[in-house]
Image (cartoon, rainbow, N blue to C red; front, side, top):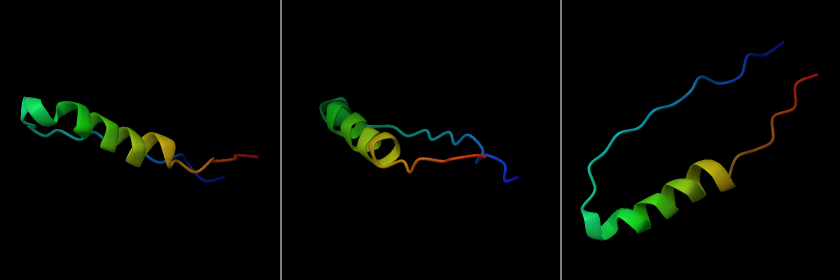
Amino acid sequence: MPYPPPEIKISCLIDEKYAELAVRALHEAFIENQETIVID
């Protein structure tokens, strides 16, 4: 049985004026584009 992938932690510094754009980009990349993992 395969194990789930490990948790990934990412840190970066972003200028305040780009904060909302950065959060939206990260959300799209890591939340909306996740493939469903099915474990039997």
